[in-house]
Each structure stands twice: as structure tokens, then as C-alpha cells.
Image (cartoon, rainbow, N blue to C red; front, side, top):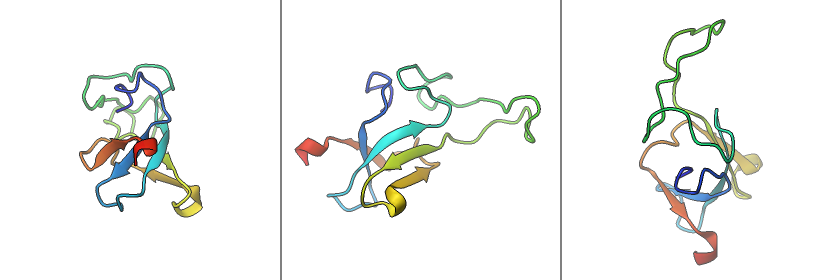
Length: 96
């Protein structure tokens, strides 16, 4: 979805387990700089290895963490490690 949005954060998503009237704004994706293409091979852009000096040096990193923001979330934010699965849909709040 990030790539589809011209490599820009700030788009809205809904998880299939949420009520239909709930959505959240994607405000951060781990290891991604807003406006820049994600490094790696689509569609999952994975395969990064932990850098030298890291406790898991040389091992494949897990999924990127995605930070979501919405008034209805506890503390207004949520961090998810399942941003690359099919339980998410992009939504357009002005059309909800």
C-alpha cells in the first residue's frame, strides 16, 4: 500500500477484525524513509540481515513494524508486526 501511495506515509487502513467504522493512519514503517522506495524485492521487501554488532548479526530480520494512529486506539497509537499480511485494506475516510 505504501508503494501504491507513491511511497508516502499517511494513508489509512482497516484491519478485517475491526468494526467497519474504524480505521487508522499509517504514520511509520520500520526501516522506511517517507518518500523513498522500500529496499528489497517486492511484494514483501524482506530478506534484510541484521547488521554487524547486532545480537542476531547475519540472521534475517523479522517483519517490519508498522505504527498506526487513531483516536480510538489505546494511547492513540498501535504498533503491529503483521503489516504485510492480507488482513489489511486501504480505506479512504472521506468515503466512509
